[in-house]
Length: 210
Image (spheres, rainbow, N blue to C red):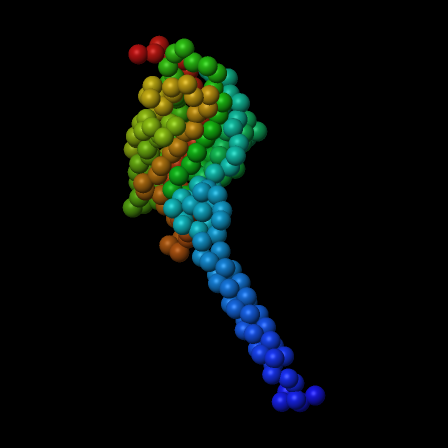
């Protein structure tokens, strides 16, 4: 039947239906575009994949730990080290665990404390002339705890008392390593591939609280 033979009321209904369908489709496209530009994702996902404000993608894991125990980050301690590594680390190797990116994190459970804690770590700088030092800032539960400049290829023992403000009533410790001088493997490499240190071992000991 020719379009002109269709009664006017039906033609108007068809036009209105067509406009409504077009409006629905346009609205759907706007919603899809809005979701693409501002997806509803958690803060960790957004920081790593969208905003790119971190090179360390949070992993929901907390390792068990016994005070006074030394955790090796060489191949011989790979299993226990893996349980406390959150992000920003390579796999364990014979010379330690390499950092990856601009930040690395460890997370571990701690018992109720009636004392303070001291951390002892063995670390070595990753150097490539003209970059011959690595500056590392260590924070615990968001509180700056220590800063060190590493040089030379041999591991160095670093010890510091964790600030009481970082402990409080916490049952976990999150230890963040921020690197100021990371070296990319190639000039075109992403920041997530930067290397700064090799972590060889980690230890916590009880100390008298202030």
